[in-house]
Amino acid sequence: MTKTLSIATWNINSVRLRIDLVTRFLAEQQPDVLCLQETKCPNDAFPHAAFEKAGYRYRTIAGIKGYNGVAIVSRLPIAPVEAREMCGKPDARHICARLGEGADAITLHNFYVPAGGDIADPEANPKFAHKLAFLEELTRFSETARKTDPRSVLVGDLNIAPLEHDVWSHKQLLDVVSHTPIETKGLMETIATGDWIDAMRLLSPEPKKLYSWWSYRSPDWDKADKGRRLDHVWLGKGLDGALKAGHFFRETRGWERPSDHVPVMVTLDLS
DNA sequence: ATGGTGGTTAGACCA
Image (cartoon, rainbow, N blue to C red; front, side, top):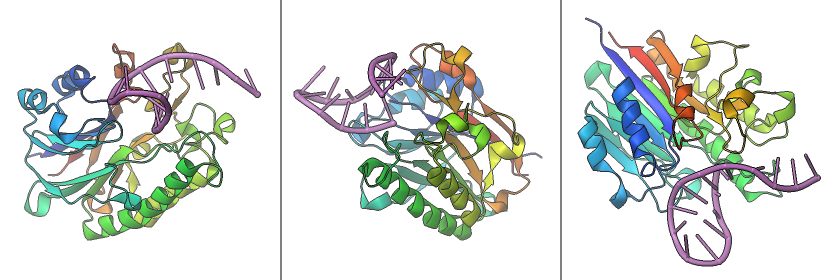
């Protein structure tokens, strides 16, 4: 018997405004688990009923008013795990859950890394300083997490496109926050320190271009195709060999009133 | 070099 598990991640940019896009994606792709970022939704306003109706009965959410916010929704039972308060701020950028039981169990971490503002200088820009501090903390935390449970999965909007072919123009984006050397080296260091597998790159190595985000500010985003890979799925070595498939759902960027990010989904074979 | 587009929520803040 083959046991598969599919996990998707999507920066939805307001789960309430785009709940119909979320339920459409769930109906069409039927991931077992969906991790959301930028829900922009206080916990008491989370659209539970729509997820319940869609068959995603198991949920753990961490939202604040106005911005940030993360959630894990699942059609399989999940057990919430205590979230990490990153950089000492209660700003809803991490949530965690356990999936399954016994030897099959997996620990799933869902992160929303700070975007970092416009100026790539931590002295001049506190938001960039926060992003770099977050990245340092992510490196240490994720190494511990993966060692604690080798069957860990880390997903989310990490707001960094680490590789040359994770952006439409490596040269033109070297000074642009999300692809500066200090960020790309930092994220590669996080991967190396934690001994993570970059799932989408395992399936589609460089030099294939991979994008998960296209700016709202770019007219004709599809034709211009000035994308970046900001959304990631990492696997702990305890899941080495389990990765069966992965996909970026680019078509959702063309849906009406879209998120600027598209879902990424992986399928694991746990048999 | 600039401004381009969105969401949240009530004048900015965030991306």
